[in-house]
Image (tube, rainbow, N blue to C red):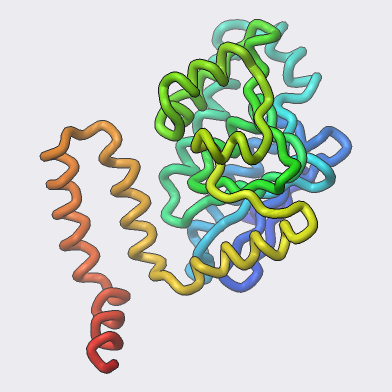
Length: 255
């Protein structure tokens, strides 16, 4: 099954899977097709042994502006069951991003607002151009960034999370980095090259080790200290048994 749809473009460039939101005329607004295409693309990257990292970016000037007008109209007219099904589709995308083995990186230029900011936050890492903007303005139309809140709360402090979801203010890229929403901010002029240089770092890492580290990091969220340490023991043992670890140790000992 091809990962590429009209709304989402998918290519593999060396060890990098490039996933592009392809609705530039709609500021890459979320709709059912785009959400489905993203989920398929992320899973495609995870199945490809060549891929060490997947990066999501937006075609045109913006990363993603949230739900489009037709999606909002659909929400306004839908039944409880229909709205629940619709919300679960986005939830499933967020869960997929967390559960796949490869790191998923958001490369944000322009605006990442509402569901678009939620999508970026759901990724494992967020890279931003210096002029990028982030925000959860849903509260201004009586909506709540409900599902991404579980991830946002793990990314920033409780006070910052409360401020972001109840005031709906926009943050600059540098402000977003300061509060922990963004990992790195790069110059607008060199953003594409800087992102590629950053992603190249995953070409120097073990795919299996990164996958185990990602799984453990998210697994320990709900554990107490002893439980987290025990989970660490299990992953430590599993890592020692992998071919990557055995080969890495052998190469290190030869030096």
